[in-house]
Structure formats: structure tokens, C-alpha cells
Image (cartoon, rainbow, N blue to C red; front, side, top):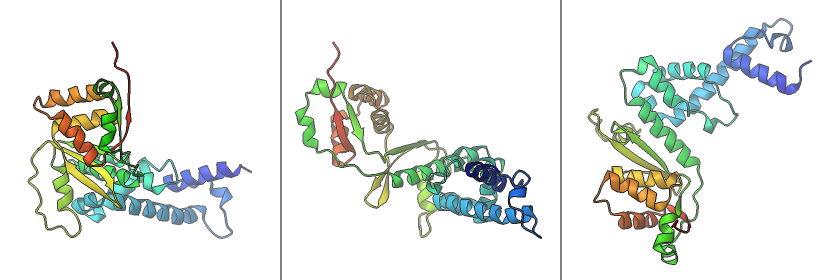
Length: 260
């Protein structure tokens, strides 16, 4: 008799693949075909996972129609089943799947829209850390701050797309009165973060997005600033840094002695 964890793993594989042979003799009941019994669990599992994906990607569902999304989700689940039992964590790979799914080729922006919705999902699950007051800047010498780093809210996500994904998302909300945007390539940088019980989203310039991205990756302040200035020589570093505090994005400063 296999161990319990082995039976559980075999049962999961059988449900997701539809092949009852490896587990069949362990779920036999007099007068019942193991394959028929397994198909009940398989159907319920696929329905539950599809419903979870629909809840995470509602704008994508609205654009492609629920029936098509269920077909796509079924194909996705069969190809890339969950690796952990937490439904809220399932769906990250759908972004790349949508981009390579042949029936979606006529919607080149759909993968980026899915990426935006996944970022919304992630941001909403993150905690909100206490913000650092702007007065903390006065306690650190400029050269020490420049060599140090800034810790930002953990919910921050930055989506960069060649399509107007935020406008597309807004136009495809349940009660939206916004007209569908013109589907022309347009560089879009969306900052997503948790705010209160919801999620806030804002459009950002290339320089501001570069600054936030660099800081979020742990770059030294001066390195992040140079990356932003390269994007826009007229970029107001001081003004933008102060705005991060005003927007409650900064949760910590790590000072570092400048290298000689």
C-alpha cells in the first residue's frame, strides 16, 4: 500500500491528466468504473480553478467572452496545473500562456492586460507597511543618502507596455462608461499599489518609472537617480523623491557611507 502522500500525489496527477490507471485500483468501488468516479473530481477541479482564474482576470474575460475564456483556461490548467494548494497564487503563468496561445494572436495587447491584472492581484494580497515621514531625510547627510537605498511599499508593482493597458482595463470594468480606447501602440507605464482596502493605479513618465523600478530593485539612490536622468535630463530628482514620501510609498531608508 503506498504512503498517504504518494496516494495524494498520484490522485492529483490523475485528476489533472484524466488518466485513472495509476490510481484506479485504489479507488475501486463495486459496480463503479474508477474512470467515471475520477471524472467527477476532475470536472469539479477544473471548474474551481477556472472560476479562480476568472476572478483574477475579469477584464480579460470580458474582452474574449466567458465561453472562450473557459476553453482557454481548461487548456491552460491541463498544461500548467497548480504547484501549490493556494488558489490566490495560481495564475501567474497565464500571462505568458495568453501570449503564446494561438487563438489570441489577433489580440496582441491581451498578454499585457493579463500581466496588469495579475499585478493587481499581487498588490492586493500584500501588506501595507508604516510609511516613513519625510523628516527622516533631514537626519541623513546627502552623500550618505546617495550611497544608501530606499525601501518602498511591498505592494508596488510596475507594468510597462506598448499598449494603453490601463485605459483598456478601465473600459472593461463591469459598470464602466468609458469608451474603448483606440488600440494603437502607446508606451504605458502603470504603477500599482495597495491603498486602504483596494488597489490604486497611476500612469507614470519613463523617468519616474525608471527611478521607482531601480529603487525597488535595491539600487543605491544615486544610481537610481542617474538612471532616471538618462531618461529625462530635466527630471526633478528632489521633487520626485519628496513626492514618494507624500504618497506614502517610502517605508525605510538604509544609509551607506560613500566610497572614496
